[in-house]
Length: 167
Image (cartoon, rainbow, N blue to C red):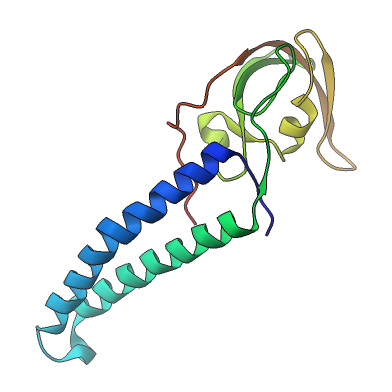
């Protein structure tokens, strides 16, 4: 697996694990116990639904623990004048002149629909270490590439508001 995670990603994962163990797990167990008391388990939809919720919670806990255990911890620090993790970057697409703003995050928080691009995506990789005014060539694959210009970027502090992706 070996995902690249920042210390704040790991902290968020640990908080989610704690919440799932201390809040969600007891609720799920109680729901299974209550549904089991309704009688015949073979035709008890509530029991099967409660078991499914309980098992999904346990799977998510195991998944997060494995990600933390196998993670490669990377620094959130970058030079003051260079694009880095958790920076908000405004780029101009050279081909058509459109301007977009993205925040570069790790893969566990990436969500392109919300403007959060992964540091492992073609655009994220290309932007890391660049400065305002730089022309950046983004190679998507052997057949597709494009150029962007870094208009500006902000060294933002990770406020923890970005959610971890759920699988």
